Image (cartoon, rainbow, N blue to C red; front, top):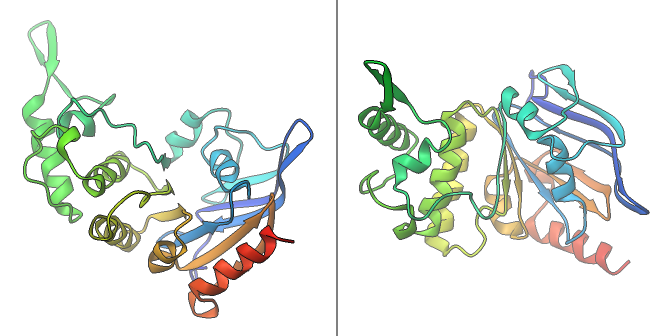
Length: 252
């Protein structure tokens, strides 16, 4: 919770069923500008389902959603994206054979008119992508490098930076440090802290509780579709406490 601010996104009583399976049961959740919420739990806890409701991939069966104080209902991820809600998935959606600047503007290429024709404005896209990456602390050798030669941490950082450049206000990160070395994971965690400082709301979903703990301001724990704990302040819980709750629920 951020004192004196309204939630960027607030979910009230969200339920979702798939046939006879209850994926979420009356879950409340909120995230504020400038904070990172750790959304944690075991496999099948409902974390991904809740995230996909926030981005409009799924529609809830029950409950209400509010963004920037206004009630919303998304029919598709495009509806959420228009408001500035983005999710960076584990597979990143980057094209290895394309260079950094092409990936950065993929699907949103800048063009310039030449007579009756339009051509890619390559120089502007190179310049803007390089300046923005440097501006948020991402160090790269050249935006001409193919994404396929980058490290996992560099790839993850570029995928995150791209969403921020195009106006993300709420960023949902799905396992952002999976399969990264300690050094590469550190780069991604540093970027998350940098973006919090710029006022973004961030939700991080990860099985690595210790990575989540480094960047999260508070924690929501799900188990089999139910919110079982909400820690509003990091000082109230340790990483081991969170692990113990998840393990205990798993065997209950």
